[in-house]
Structure formats: C-alpha cells, structure tokens
Length: 162
Image (tube, rainbow, N blue to C red; front, side, top):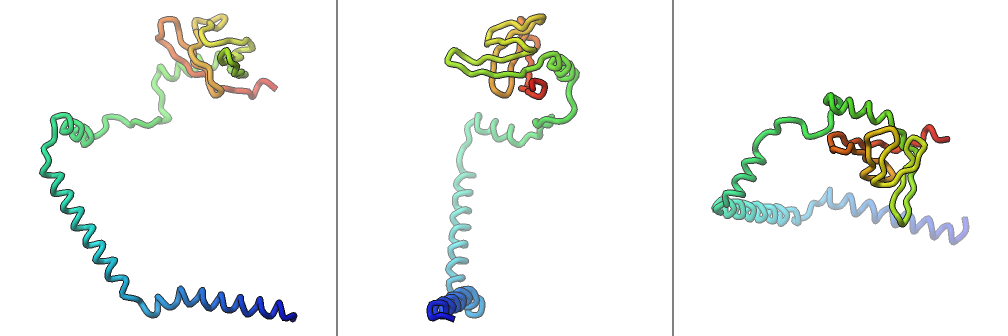
C-alpha cells in the first residue's frame, strides 16, 4: 500500500468515527436542549389559544355568516366526475364519434384543425352538419350548434392518420 492510499484510509476512518459520533453521542447523552423546545411549543399553544379566543369575540357580518353556513352544509351531489353519464352526455358521446380531429396548425392568423379530412378555422361550419367551430386547441376542438343547445369537445386523435 502506498503512502497516499494509507493516508486516504486513515482519513476515511476518521470521517466514519466523527460521523458515528454525531449520531451516537446525542442518543447516549441527551442534552437539555429538548426542554426549551417543549417550552417553545407551550408558548405557541398559548398564543394559538389567545388568537382563537380573539377570533371568537369578533362580530361576523351577515355575508361571512352565510359563507360559513354554506361551508358547513353537506354536498347534495358528488362534484367530481363519475363513470356514470347522463343521457345527454351519452348522446353527446355518440355525436363526437361522427368527428375525427386529426390535425392541428397554429399560425399568426389563428389555429386551424383538420376534422374528417377537411381543414377548418374558428367560426367555420362543419360540412354535412349543424356545427360551428368555436375553439381550436392542440388537445381538442369545441363544436357548437347554431342555437347553442349542443356543445361538443372533440379530442385530438391521430391514430388513424398514419
């Protein structure tokens, strides 16, 4: 073993001893620093109680009372998406199947989409349909009937374009 390797081994052993010492010494000889932490926690708890007491003394406005009452009322329905769809959602899904959004182009003049093999811009009417394009993004196209009764979001699908 060279002198350099010998020195490296000694330095590694010293580092290991120091490292173990920083973890073992506090366990074997606990310091008194734990007591101030519990005193600090007691101070924080006391301050929290004072703040809660002061908040309870405040007079709430009728709007604040209404908001708090609304927050306490249970939800009448699940606000998150569920797998069950309404009949209108099912019929919309059937309508979406009639459209294939397979291309997207973003230019300085606006976004363009390829739907059923034809290119369209926002405001264009779909051929053979009662739908107008109201929004084009890279992920979906929004279609709407003239009277606004049906709004569809057709997702981008490039699986059939290759």
